Length: 353
Image 1 (cartoon, rainbow, N blue to C red):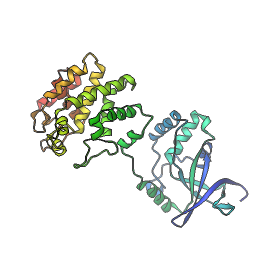
Image 2: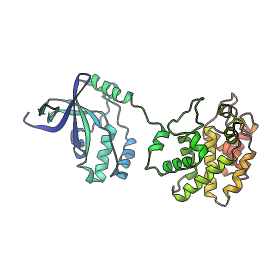
Image 3: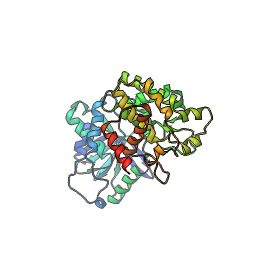
Image 4: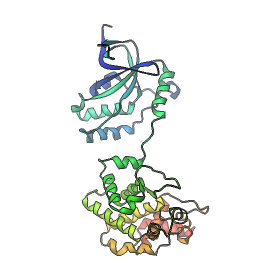
């Protein structure tokens, strides 16, 4: 080949097929992988269409984490002539690819597009590299199967586990800290799963509290003042939540708490998030004065106040935005807190049905 790309690579074998791994400068991605704006029917494409909405999010991740961003390898097929020149018989060498060849992304099109967008705003990234796994193109059917295989068995990380490991999200850090410092929550919050089985040793998920804390924070800054508020707020909720105390003292079993009470349900934790947001915004309502009011709430599923608020006529839980507001109304009423206009409207609508 007179004119070609030359990539230093490592050769490997999977399923009897040879592949090559190269480190490619980010500035080269636009040259290797041309954008195809023409619409092609799904059955004639090697993978899904580019979702433009995902690009800004990934680009923001790169630009806000210049010194710590990380990406997995791109996977691409070479449609054209290429030749591997091995060096020292150890699987390393030079992959020569004809300039007439096409490179087709099998996995990583959104990463590539976001990197190109980030380079437009910060050219200092252009000489950094990303690993690319090259395969020989074996036609559309094979490319489609590769895309399926690369994505089909990728297990999405649970929200709880992502929040457990995320050190950039200050709210996630604050949530983990608060849970770790409150013994009851540290014991009964599952930090990996988003869904708990009925025989789980845990009562809550980390994601439930993270989402509730989002409702408390709203658009304010997650600073030390907010962290102190979270610590005090959830400590007092734990202190005055009678069913939780009864379970700790063995008066109730976890099974009874789950089946006969609403106190450990996600909708209630989210409702506490709404109430906490009100208290954080209106600091004139002292937590230690108002939160003891929740001791007056009947948390049993059979209690009249929960019917059609968070429990359907068939006994199943309701966990939507309206149910969260209506559950929060019960909590606020027990504490002697005023309802906001949207809470009053939700209450009136509920009472009319």
